Image (cartoon, rainbow, N blue to C red; front, side, top):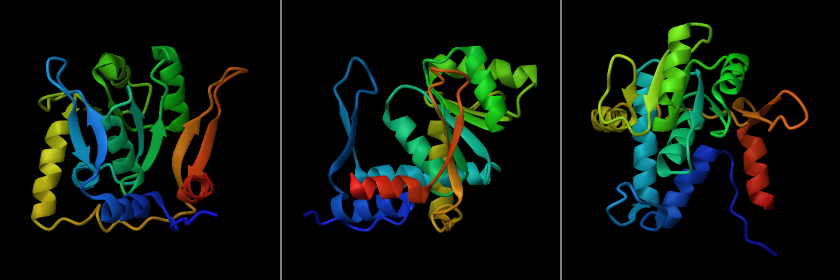
Length: 211
């Protein structure tokens, strides 16, 4: 009773969504509390995903386990897609967890990079400083400039756009194995220690097609 388009993997899903709905609004977000909502179309979303993924690969994050944490916002969604669609393995983390709980999950998942909102910057900077996790790279959703301690997502997107314009297709042409683990999702841990669930593109896309 439904006309369902086939979805092979998440990368193909967003690319075909752009073909169908390119000029339609994907996100609306208030970036400045004193201004109104801004719209991001599907086409703009894909351009940012491609740019961010390209820049992360250029910074040595290909194949790495990369955590994403923060409030619901376009930066979170773009980060998640840029990791899972050609950069590495995405590890979404619950923004309500405390620092010790987050450290346990980061250690368990062997996370080497974190993309986070401003609220969590100091938590992960301290983890990196302590040296008892594998964290080497921290990227800030809201960081205006790149520093010695933290990369700016905004600047990485700009860098990625320049690389793509020069012909870098390392992310855009990245092959997706639908059966390979691409997402490490932790359970809520309500009855004990949170467990890591290993998921692939096929798991997610199957759910999307039968939803």
